[in-house]
Length: 133
Image (cartoon, rainbow, N blue to C red; front, side, top):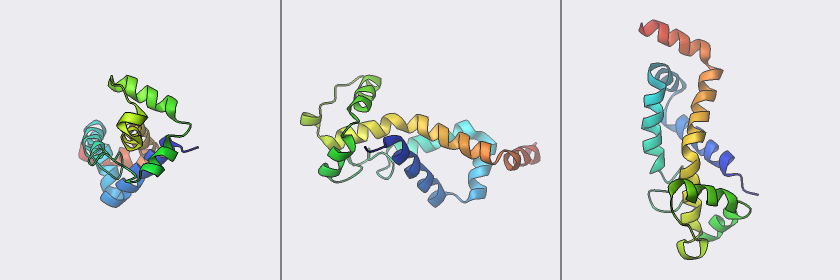
């Protein structure tokens, strides 16, 4: 079964490692974690490498999107309810459904990733915060 949570988390971690040095990442979290979250959320929400929302497809492959959805229809239902829309695999297509799930999970997983980075580097982040005061 395809694990959307793990896939989105891995994509976020990869994007962060490509876009920020470890020092830049800790600096951003130390200075304004909530603001950094908002900035990343806005970027990642329309990023094909995280959600597929920019083009309407993360996989660029209907078959792969269909395979991702197998055994994840409950997650699709949650996403549709959260966004207040009706999603139909047959009429909307598997790729749109795949993107919907990724967008739905983005906020919670991004928050989790930033929390994990902060917890793993709390001493360094505290030093950065103290130096800024």
